Length: 186
Image 1 (cartoon, rainbow, N blue to C red):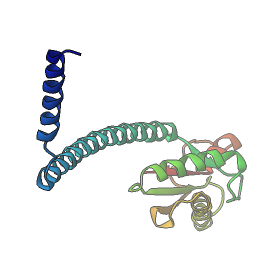
Image 2 (tube, rainbow, N blue to C red):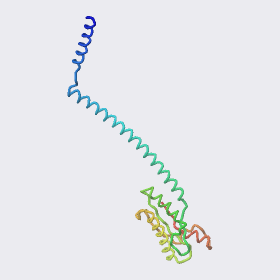
Image 3 (cartoon, rainbow, N blue to C red):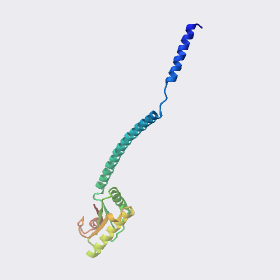
Image 4 (cartoon, one colour):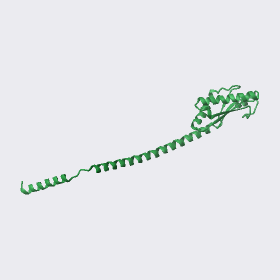
């Protein structure tokens, strides 16, 4: 090796040593400041993520509420005109009318503030007093069926009209069978 090459090697080595010796290590304050910035940035990112999540949750809840309201509205429309009919001189809910009772119970479960009045009716045969009592038994039978479906008794009222307010006029079984009923009124 020549002397100039040795000088060059010495200069390069010296510069490398100087550069390594001049590098500084961060102080404790600088480290803490950097950590605090990182924590603040993470907290800000977490807060923004929480805001986005809350907005998404609110949108989902709004959509679910709208869907539930639509379902309740559809169910209410389907309930219009539905009655529970009874056999002559009977107050037991027949199995073919359990679906009507179930639909009413479902509607009441969707609408926590709704109350229902069950109106009991009879045909014209029998005395006024007997028909009022039979109408009440019929209304109470439907009320008990609703309670069995989970509806609170405090949300159900009953009333008997006996033979008043017939839906079908006539002196035959076809008319009488339509008048032996329990109606729902919201």
